[in-house]
Image (cartoon, rainbow, N blue to C red; front, side):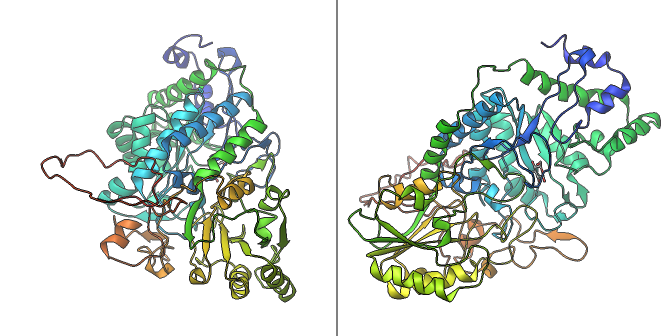
Length: 581
Ligand code: BGC
């Protein structure tokens, strides 16, 4: 399809065509130029399901998109510690994109969980750069094996939602290179994402979208990135400076405003036509890489992919506590309590929001079983309802075991806002207390995108952390509760005992000058808690299974041990905890 090499093609383009190639033509499409055989390609969110919008477009998850399969979000999939799972998730999404004519999937999102308050943590993998990088590289390789591009995001240091469009992340180069860059670096070096999406925020005062050091020196020269960089939606500041710094594509369309600025920049000699040519070449390389490898036979098999979402969910849930209450037995009198059993929380709000093909709740998955149900709280409020609480206690008393479904609501964590607290809503906490008062055998299933505090942990016998488990959440939860599948997830983040223990606590939201100082430096997540020898609720890497292990006679031979530069690699462990030697 490519009529000639892109350099020659660019030579045949008018200045106007080149300028327009550097901006989206609408919300989701790049410009096509018929006379030159340049197709208009489409990009879509991402990351844990396809959010392809047919007509009314927005980047906030407001208007609907086509029906698609919602997989568990990254906070959960990272808990699998399983590269092969991420690779196969990527392959499935890549196939879906081919079938739906989507050229670039906007993900994965790899920002580091600096604070558990970040409203978008559900979309991010981990507090640990190495784990985040391995997960991202595997996902990218999977998607791109189907000849569909990815856009690893948000480059870089986008760790909070509050004032995300303007805030300046103030930090030193060591912290950037050791904590906030390595996930991007690993993904670029191992998997060459076709595109990178820059973040809205500034880094040490300079917007990512025009940060030459970030986009040219670090990304291209240091790491060898070969694709093109696009803005997050509306992240362009000074468009001319942006192109000069290495930001090729502005998304979405700015309605001609930035095209006019680029034109003026060329006329005034602020940017050379040659620099513009390079930007266009990089964009066209990717456009044709997709167009030349179209797979017209690809099918979006929603039923089959729903099953894949189920399999993924099984690996992403983490068993945090079990004092003999689990697995459940089918001969027990079981009651499910809590609205999330019927209306599960399984994905987050914002640009990643998927119009799910089929959602299976725990209650629905249990319909063949003799399970009673009491809602326990009203899902539309955070206040407790006495009548619902009494009903829940009655149901709990009559049962052998009560499974309480709670978590964080959509209104408490989402793109565009940060959490204020690590507590669950009041009515969820009160419900756990009320049920555990009358039923010793209480198990809690938590559905949310990040960590929470658990003032009730000593009152219950079991905790299964479902994270945001995707549309097959109910089936997967039941498989794990009943032991049809052995839980294997391990936390990709530390659960502190109190929010105040988190190292970024004092500075997280930033100051009046719109700066957020990263004063904790490299001591992010477990690096801090370990160093401080601090007691945490659950450490990074924690997760139980129904199997018990015994280690004995372990020996280390110092003549065999080598201290070299190779980082310790995580394998897909099915052990209850990661062994740290
Ligand atoms: C988000 C990106 C997303 C883009 C397009 C932005 O608001 O930050 O993650 O890809 O919108 O929807």
